View 1 (cartoon, rainbow over the protein chains, first blue to last red):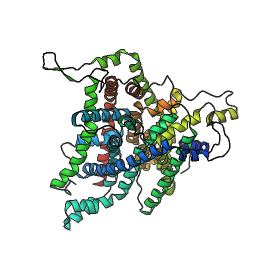
View 2 (tube, helix red, strand yellow):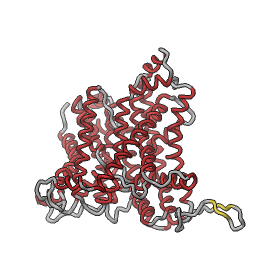
View 3 (spheres, each protein chain N blue to C red):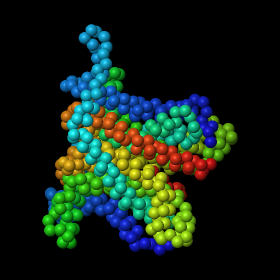
View 4 (cartoon, rainbow over the protein chains, first blue to last red):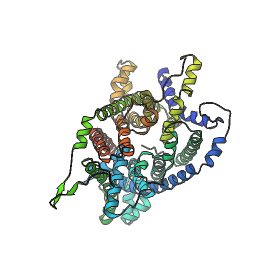
Length: 269
Length: 304
């Protein structure tokens, strides 16, 4: 199969487009100058400035806590949701169920954020819960939209699994719950890990929904980043971006190593 | 396979937990937005009138008003921003398709390790912060930024181009952020495609581009539809990209909603803006659900 020169150049252009902005941020994060656009020699001063910035550090810690909680709960809910979709066959409320499970993937964030805030305010007025807004409300919001992503990953893996393994366990006398926990869940482990990581990433990255459902004193990392870059550039954010990108590259490399040993690849979609 | 695994109470529980959660935290909230969109804005806590108020004679009265919707129709700003959002989302979707198709095609035709690496390179940016990636374009498109620097150095332009805070910058931001959403479904469709059909067309005398347009493209249509909807729907309501990269001419509806809520504190108007946006997006969302179900059914058949 010969490779047409146009296809190769189009593909190269596409990948350059994907990576040029990321590489630029990394290079500028080592800029010693106070002004982002003027090169002032190699320096790591913005990394030290970042480590002394309490506002960014405490926001990062808050985001990390919310992301771990949300990803864990969303993985459990997404496992159940995906399981219902693949293994329950046809049932009466299937259209409603699958719609609610998948719609958070595409409903614009401003709508999800606004509607959840309206719910929280109405619940608080009626039942006194949740009292005020902050970590709890942000976590509930993140669990809700992350569940949809986990369910997609679980569904695609589960539909490739041979149900006869589960049937064999049942034939050999395992109770349904035992079969689910000892056969289905371990077989789904790669999808659950991928789903958890995806949910974690989405949660720690969310600006719009968190801005709606957060309250005073609970600023997540994206909210702090946004307030810093809304009107201009920030060399500290360049350094932070580089650290985040490095974390992703390390994480994905580890995941790739594990999955290439397990001979199974899981993609976000 | 008909759910024989979990019987009785276990089966019910597995179904009920996600159902309850999603009903409470995804479906129910929309009704509150609908309710508030029918209220009037007042200076109080919460800042809107109750739907059911006490009538002067001591009974109850329904205080619903369509005034907010009438206001949306009346003020050209809202209509214009809906149209701008749809136009920007549509153009971005087409651009994503044009850039994404060759990449998806190349990944689908690559073999072994090369395929895995090409695929990972598409997915990797998706895992890094969306906000950071949009901000990166702010750095790139600055007057003294890298792109202007290279163009000046090459002698293509004499003075720095004004690229940031324009509609063009919004297109770049959306295409860049949503490209993986286009490439992955396209790749899935193209990887399933049986290339002997393309070879048959070539053997029967088709030119390569004819075979591409008449065989490859139609057979990858499910991927084109799914990818386009996955880009178009969220792009319509996009807030971060027009806010960080756009100028005064790119007033998209997500930005209007945000400003009504956070700057003007007008909850009823913000809610009616959201309801109208949802109504516009109901059809594309239903189409997407439908295409996902078809793909799911086909996969289920293939595995049966």
